[in-house]
Length: 132
Image 1 (cartoon, rainbow, N blue to C red):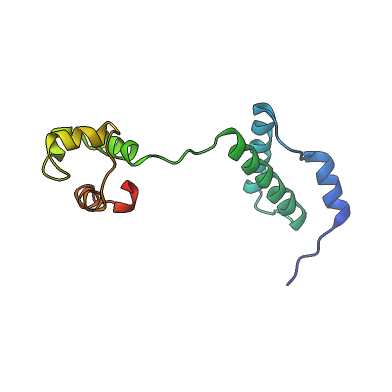
Image 2: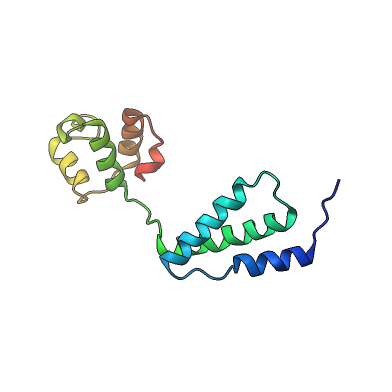
C-alpha cells in the first residue's frame, strides 16, 4: 500500500520545525532534538518522515563543515595502537626493524615499507592498509 503524501500537512510541519541551514551550535542542538523526537514517533507519517530526512541532511552538512574528520597518518595509527595495547617501541624491534628504524618510524622520520605495514598488520591483527 502506498502512503498518501499530504502537502498541507507537510507545509504545517515546515512551519512548526522551520528547517534551515544550520550555522550555530544552538541551531544544531535544536535540530538534533527535533530529529530525535521524529525518530521516536512510532506513528510517523510520510510528511514527518520527509521533515526528518531534511533535518538529517542539514545536520550532516553542519557536522561535515564543523567537525571535519582528518585522515590519520600511518604514524598516528601506529601510536594509537601502541598506546591502546600498552606496547613500547622496544616491543616492535624485530617486527619492523632495528631500534633505530622503529624510533624513526614512530617519530614520523621514516615511512613504513609495504613489508613493515604487513608485519604490523599481522602483529596488531588489523589491515596493513592502515599503515600505508
